[in-house]
Length: 102
Image (cartoon, rainbow, N blue to C red):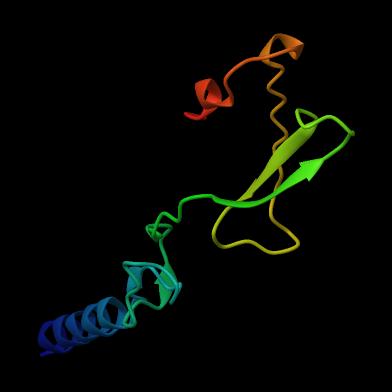
């Protein structure tokens, strides 16, 4: 009788602990693979790739060639990180398109 009671208690404990485990998955509702049933984020979230958008051409001198193009990701805010790429074009002329695959 004691063995049966102990066995039943252990099985019950096992079922309770395994069924109460938090389901893992993507918990970010903005992600493509968001799982509304997930209770714990497992780092698997994936997001739609948004191509960069040319925001504006900014001049820094009187000459037509003295300008830079500002590109920002399609989704950005004041905390978006910035990378500055200086394309010198031999500092005279050169195709900006040569650096387009960055």
